[in-house]
Image (cartoon, rainbow, N blue to C red; front, side, top):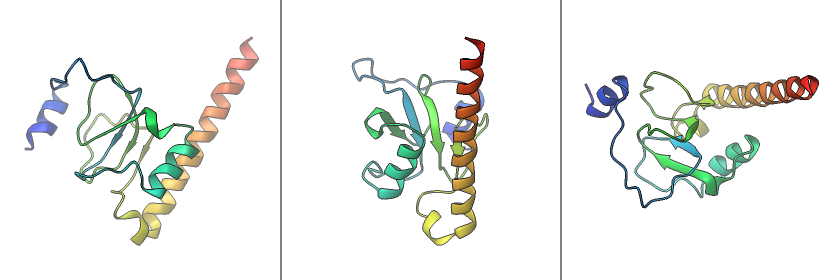
Length: 123
């Protein structure tokens, strides 16, 4: 078993430097590359209403930020991401995965609208 998956399953967090300011959102991926300038990444985050500058990009779950998008090949429970998809490199070549991603985005936006409507009705 992968050490990171084992630690995640036991809900054990890894040490992170305190002097590095944390960002409120997290995007999980498998690549050891800068994903922040990819068009698809920017478009999806914009649709979700998340500024890319407020996102941390990492290969493993960290405590604190909300997981916006989990695009790791091997998904680890608990699944707490707003949307879950195939890795970014697989999306352009797999129409079914891309369709599934857009469906999740649509469902997330619908849920946000419903939640906002319920909050306004309570006031």
